[in-house]
Length: 454
Image: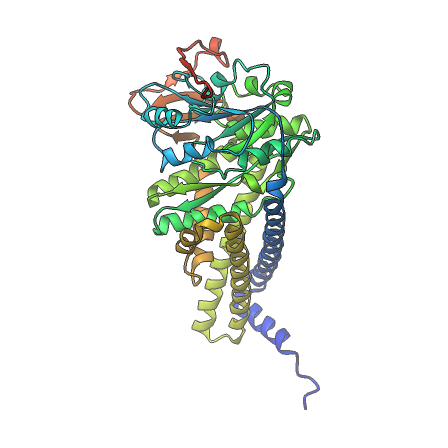
């Protein structure tokens, strides 16, 4: 009497198809398969990232370089614990380096902190450059162009770091040593947010950023993060990076573009991952995410499109699963277990990935165990919340072309070229005259060189 009974999974599939419609069921199963495969690949990548990070961190103390390095630090306004961040730069375990701080104006509140840090570390050659206002280029990029206009002949390595990053003492040594390989055009680290308060906004940003960081491997796919990277001087001049920065907003993604054109590889160095103290409100967190993704949309559209597609597929799967589960409960469909099982499987895979990332964070920052523990999100809803917030940030970046960054709003055009610049105290944006497009306008600057003690 059991000869004609169909297997339970075929019966469930038939019930599901009859209840939801064959087309909807086919699409759902296809999306579910893609999402599960994607989740498995992300776990493998997170595992490989941790393996590579542990290996590099274990050998970081043995890395050496004798090349003279010059660190460039563009500053604007007050970052969280700015003094601690700048002090970390002057405490590097490296034989021959100097630090150049660059600001827009001598009235910038960061100048007081910079002066204090310079006075406390007179054993390190330092200088402060006042670059003046930018009218055609992003202010940070303008600052970097002003600072790299005249380079000392003895400088061999140019190092760039953001004022909100706090690198470890072996950071500069790891950057310089990685450039000993002549096949590498540049070496980059990345940020790892360290929440200063265990607020929900800080936790979400920490989690989303940690997910992105875990995607990096030995080969960074030519991507550079401007907050922690280095390039040999001859490569900087060969690819014409300073000229390529004219009229643009992004220093790092323009560098990525030029290195890709020159077919010069970019090495990701885990020992150069920098902790970044963060303390954001929800509005600030979302504004930060939207700004980062908008920059990516204009300068790396292929990567941005792929990220948006993957995030949208994930969100669609979760929404479709909830619809099918509620529909099944309302109609009494026995096949409701199928979307439940798929969601449960995806949830377990997400927890596995998060556990690997947390383990990686402990390897990066063994001295930040308490802060990292406080930054954890409740496992019950963490994965879904980060997926949704990240997707909203990506979707919001699809609209508009205005980016506000540290009190300045930029309108971007094709290829990321800046169309207009307006400072928040101004009534109208500054139009870019066609006859001056891309030209460097002479601006007042002040160089204050420092000497080594003795």
